[in-house]
Length: 275
Image (tube, rainbow, N blue to C red; front, side, top):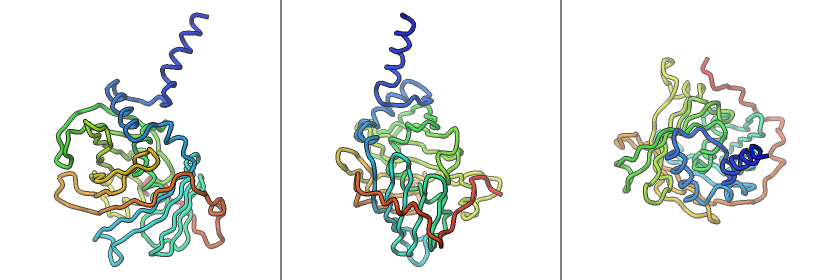
């Protein structure tokens, strides 16, 4: 009986705060990550979301004639199924939990990759709690992109996080040392078909790192999400794009009819490994 009580106590200590057990490099890593999640509104509050929708707009000179990518996205947070409308291109993209398909897809990026890009951008603090995440050692540094000192923690993966991502992807988190808000992160992309589009050498298995700076974080019903972001080179000498994420809605309608594949849909059958 005593042994059973000890097991139950350890289980309570491990899971009683709502966090799944992660591969933290140290107790300090765990402490900083938990403070970051609390600063963004808490894990339980985020976990209670049924649906999340938002509009994202990116401007970059590299995008050619249009120079803007705009998409309206709705996500079923329990299953991570989602659908997007791209009004400037007349395109749609859907992830039904198993495969990704598109109609009139014209952006160039592999749909398998594109379906989850902004899901990660807006939910990154809480996604540190996914089962396949590894969180590295903590270093406290002064970084030229941020006013306060930041805690630097590398987030990597033991397996591919979702279709369209690679287990070789990584995020290096920069967490404000005073507010514990996620100020930004460096990230790499390793999805093979995207590397081919970007003309990355076959000898290199990732693109980046690139530095994403969250220049404004807003409060949506007690949860803090990024609303303005800019993407630069890590040395801050080049600017690649600016992003606005707005019209956030929590627990709105999820249109199940969007999970029904139309006859003219094209399924992306690409995989993360380069050919």
